[in-house]
Image (cartoon, rainbow, N blue to C red; front, side, top):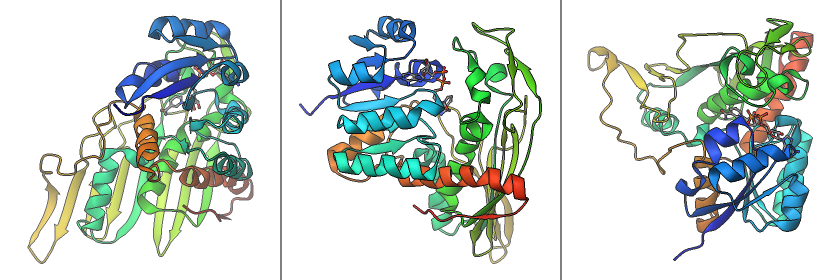
Length: 364
Ligand SMILES: NC(=O)c1ccc[n+]([C@@H]2O[C@H](COP(=O)([O-])OP(=O)(O)OC[C@H]3O[C@@H](n4cnc5c(N)ncnc54)[C@H](O)[C@@H]3O)[C@@H](O)[C@H]2O)c1
């Protein structure tokens, strides 16, 4: 029998409960051996609910006393850098929630620390692994829509206090170092760059939709949050060079939308995505073929791309990590891709302030 990877989760909040704890042992040869949270009751509650043998009240205690191969950092955004660096120093493979750092420099430090420790480092979101995105790339490579000209992505909801039920206080989402761009924009930017590759420059128009918000469910129902420190409504333009452009609509201020989440426009067609669920259906395709005398939306055959892995949950990042550890191949969710998205997000405030495009340097 092959190796069973021992997995520890740091941060026992909404996301870890929804997408990691129930799926870890279904995502590959893996055993969930420990969890940790700076709010000890959360770690203890998760340990009881998911039968996790050990729980700790800090990443330091976990590192000191726990025995594990892979750590999933599901802490709140501002904690990621420090938690990840401690895990690298302890020689652990790390899957980080997004964004893994708040600046390109800090992300580079993490990438270097992982290399020095000889461990693997990956960062979600998981879009680069999604079967519908892989299918779209396959269609593009086959020439189905001609030259790719532009891509448009909408990644919005009404705010974590409106949209998601949570036992934890969501106020931190509205503090500098978190915010709609880092929580939602990161998804759109990963999708758009997964399709188009690295961008060359970015510009952005942003606004504050509301200066105060009221929590609408969960343990903190009714609490008023100040939401006046960072914008929560962003229209982002991206230039990929060679007359290829992208547009991202992201924020915490669309309480509902019927927008198509992602569309790719080519000289001879369009690829249009449905809202992602757990199945990620193949995207719809419009083909313009004057030489054959037809144009229109066409039917996909039954899924004819065989996804490299069956995605049941966002815990597929663990499958990606384990495959990379077993084969020695690069994981799909590379930290270099994540760093490019961080660079875009860090350039956005400058563009908002100056009203100008900001050049980008990193690539992946
Ligand atoms: N991919 C997605 O679709 C998606 C959706 C929601 C949240 N997220 C991400 O997941 C992460 C967690 O979000 P959430 O919604 O679960 O938030 P949450 O507030 O419910 O949970 C975060 C948990 O981390 C703990 N924590 C904070 N700092 C810590 C530290 N230094 N050490 C140990 N524990 C610490 C908190 O006490 C809390 O229990 C964030 O990065 C968020 O952006 C991703």
